[in-house]
Image (spheres, rainbow, N blue to C red):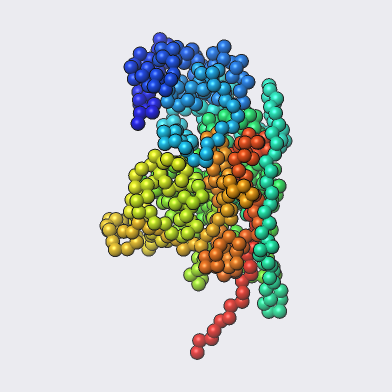
Length: 594
């Protein structure tokens, strides 16, 4: 499949009269032939327009004068984008609209959602662009004029409007836009309601030692708040948004207001940008009575995962960051991370078991399900170690985050069913993000190498030395020769993934390319919980009962508010909010050994 690859490979091999590099000669037969196959104008015409859209002296895209008044009226950020000078990809319709060559013929008309997953095998997947070390190095060659210089200490990725990159400027009050030359219409607020399930979980007091003990109720949130850095690297995902709502000065106070409004006892946050965390988010949450733990992604990305909890309700027992990047293991070469905390509920009237809270953001790439499974295995192995009790069982577990996998996908079923048979499964089908996946390679057996030190039961194996690694890679008559993996945690999802009224799929994330569910709160369901069968639950004192949850919405509701982000919702994800019940531990009777 060529799909513009020819142009990318030959980028920079030709120059125009101003010694500016071009991607491919306009006279090249390949260029004209491929443009004609998709109905574009002749190559000479296209390149004439493109060369006049780029002014070599400024190193930035500019729009032709006859298009500027048209483009200024579009509710999109594409006309503000700055990109490395190169011709648009003839096989990407969005690329032509961005450069302005054909924008006047096909204006954007609001939010255009797909059917959840990619509906055509030849469609471009909604990539989140990866910043490599080469790209970061290349960025040093760019010189910004003083009037366009970024704030000291901030970074301006290529391909995004400079005004999006303010770091810690004076916040704008929630619901108010920064000053803008044009007024944008106000959008309605998204309607979400609380689903009360407490009537299905009757609070039965425990009486131990003549004293009544009531259960411990607490709330949990999982929320991908959308890193400003990633937003700026992927502005093509937010063309439906009014530009002011993407400004961090608008987004930050909105996010803090939302967190304060829901006031969850435990919050698992993803895509938390490090500088925003240290300078704004952490101080704000600490002032509200929260304790904060944070783990930044390895590599160059500046965001990470945070777990925060109310100091009056929990105390920190231990904190365990998990880095999925493993040097020397090609499968685990990505910079995603997880964060696990062990919390002790604070209740002076009864004895409560610890709660293990895990937060993660798995790899996005829809075609690399093998990497996602390996990352998940590392997280589950660490959870099993941290949550283990003296009787070899595990304490209640909360597994939250952005798993970049849809409901009922193989990865989702592995978490919920504790087992996955993957014989003949292709890596592109693991997450279910694409309806017609491109990743056609079959999952290897085993998925991850034994040198990782994690068994097919997602448990740590005994410590090995370097001299043993060669032997570990040899096939042996154990689980590593079977096309199956499993784990020991009994987990279920706090959400049903379908709207009760309409039966339509619930949506947790929405942008210009897709609207699907990828965010979850999994938990150890106790006996009698409303979401699981009795045989899949654990004793009440070692599990959790779901009391309620904040409802999600469908595509129709999101269309009415112009998708995400919008004036009132400042992330491209919706927060998940649940309430659980933990029963106190029963007194153990110790038998005397004679």
